[in-house]
Amino acid sequence: MRTVLTLAALAVAGPAAAGPMDQPRWQASTTERKGVDELTTNLSLRRTGPGEWSVTARCETRDTRTGKWRARTGEGVAVRSMGLILIDLGKMGRMVLFERSEELFGTVPGCAQGNVDVGTGD
Image: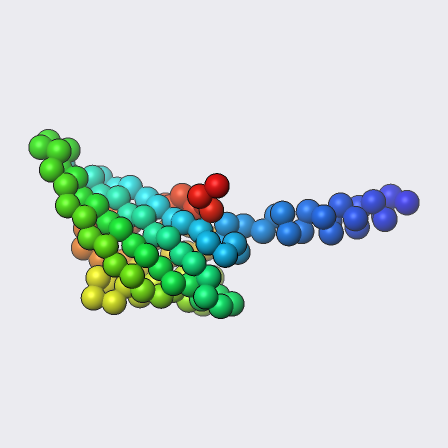
């Protein structure tokens, strides 16, 4: 009886235990401080296939002394490969999200890098 209950609990918990990156839509964001500038990166991903997403990115830079800010936006695609999510934002640049450590790195000027907060926006 105990085995049956354990198996039933695992069957019910399986789909609920799926992480945000396994959902149809999810977001990742991070903030980084560089001198007087505060950089913020927000990525919204929508699944287009197994291990594939369309991506919308918004990167903001705010001067903490003056309060002035500027933003860059872009769209592109992302694919999962060997524990990485490779993000191509076209002319804006490229980023890599390490799934296990949830760290974001890239070549996009004005975008923050580092540990991200991942969620579904719920």
